[in-house]
Amino acid sequence: MLSEELDGEVLCIDEQTGTYFSMAGTATASWNLLVAGTSAGEVAGVASSAHPGVEGVADDVDAFVSKLLEVGLLEARPDDTYEGGPSVDWGSNWTAPDVGVHADMQDILLFDPIHQVDYDKGWPHRSDD
Image 1 (cartoon, rainbow, N blue to C red):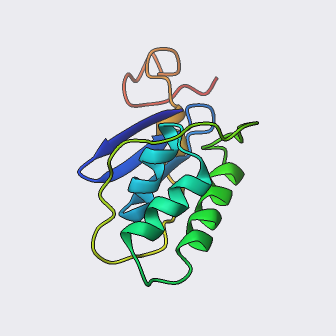
Image 2 (image 1 turned 180 degrees about the vertical axis):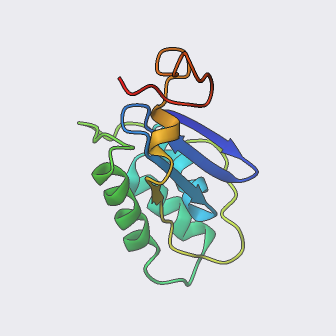
């Protein structure tokens, strides 16, 4: 799995399936805390503190974490002993974090230009093998 943050948006690519994932806004903030080892409960607490008076923040974070687990971007930890995490920007308005799942570029992302090119036609033609 490759992951990179670019201009406040996180892009992840599953090198095995060619599926890529995108996250922005509160999802980026949540992701950065989660991959730093912050527990889902701690992320929900930090998000709730950053947006006092907004209802459903903890539920939104929980749903986001569930989706990350479902699509394989996170693995459950047996313990929640980590405390703290990096400083993140939650923005001024709360929006439920979400992850976009994109399968439209799988062929391109899985294509091996060294071994799968048609040697008679050249790049970018794929061999029939």
